[in-house]
Length: 417
Image 1 (cartoon, one colour):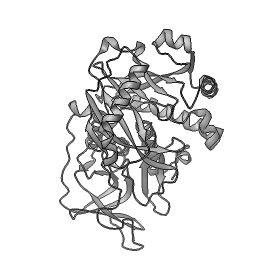
Image 2: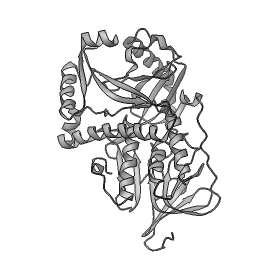
Image 3: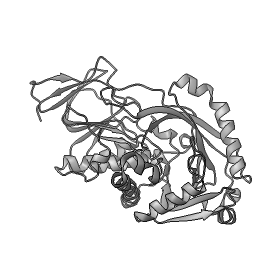
Image 4: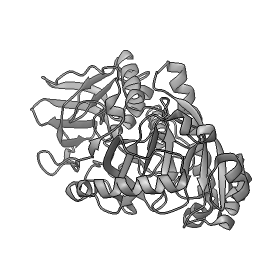
């Protein structure tokens, strides 16, 4: 494939500023203590051409690369080593339930769109489970139900209305009053909703598994390779790298997580800071059914278990992204999470064996941004904002795969830039 020199346009502003750079995480995450299959990456030493260039070798880039590599020539680059950005900071609660309750999302974007967004998330979780199992990716993928507790956003009456809204669109949910919550889970809250067939995983091993499958399909991975400038032409793009070689491509996809491209509009979206811990193994102290637990609060506490019996718990979000300020608060925030977890589940030893902080994307609706950038043909951005990052990465892979195949995903408009 050759690219013409007509209608050239530069996307970057200068060397190294194609995307916003961030210190994405700090501390000792549980996932980095566990082995991960190696993902082979080669240095980029010469100019190359490819059909599709994916910038980012985290979970979004991995799922997109695997989905496209069956029919397209794919090259993946990352300015870090693969699977070393924000993915290791994920707590990997893979849920279809969107951060914004269905009742609230209906008020924000309308009933028809809100219902479609929730239903699409349900389909995405099912599809991710099926695909991961079919490919034989070993990432501790464990089915888990999800318990949503009343809080300062939704009281018991609000939880009941949310129950009715979900049931109205075919999402099977059980409404639990105080007595039932206490009897079944040992949790003292006014009300809760139990949803079904979510899951947990090791996010690093899931990402490495999908990257390795893409490489088996013929994809190429170059890391660390930093894109500094993008020049657009009528027939494609030329990506300049920090070390000199260029990459010519027909389509470029930015799957850079919270280091978003500077030319992408971010109205209604922001980067905040979040905190998490992992306890020591304590399988005999865990709550019944080991479901995922989260709250209808802002900020909310969210927790899961691991196959070796640990509790992973996160929360205490702050509305800023400054890494130095974020990191200074780690001891205070982890202590607060330990106290909140102790109040919720008194039988748990909440002492943090692992503790970390990281950047986290937030949006007014809880929905991500996925789409072709306005005015930049064949240039896509995937910004998985909200607490459903892995779920949204699967949706992004489906939308982009359809578009590059000449089709149109019926829900693409829900997430467009």
